[in-house]
Structure formats: C-alpha cells, structure tokens
Amino acid sequence: MGYPFPEQPILFYPSLARRLGSDEALLLALYHDRARNGGRAEPGSC
Image (cartoon, rainbow, N blue to C red; front, side, top):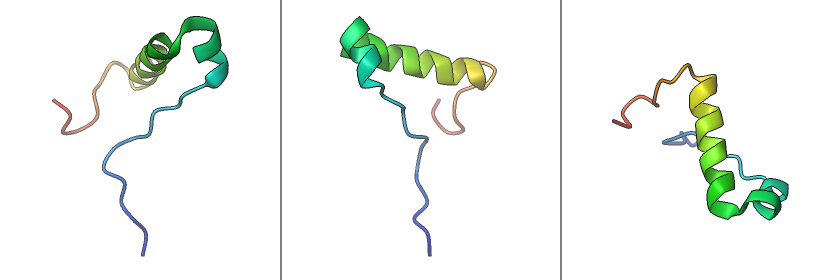
C-alpha cells in the first residue's frame, strides 16, 4: 500500500540557492513548475 502524497514536491537546487539565494531559488522552482503546467495551479490549492 503506497502513501498518497497530498501535493507535489518542490525541487530545491542547492546550486541555484548558492547563486541566487534560497528564497529566490524556491520562487524560481515554483514559477518553473507553474509554467510547465500551463499556469494552472494544483487542484484544490485555490
């Protein structure tokens, strides 16, 4: 029996955090994910 994850994980790249800062690297990951999904939020997140 697998555990159903409630949401998608956020990819955090330490190399980007070193170059941009941790907050900026997280925002970039969120923006990248949103752009990949065509601007749609995850179901139930709004």
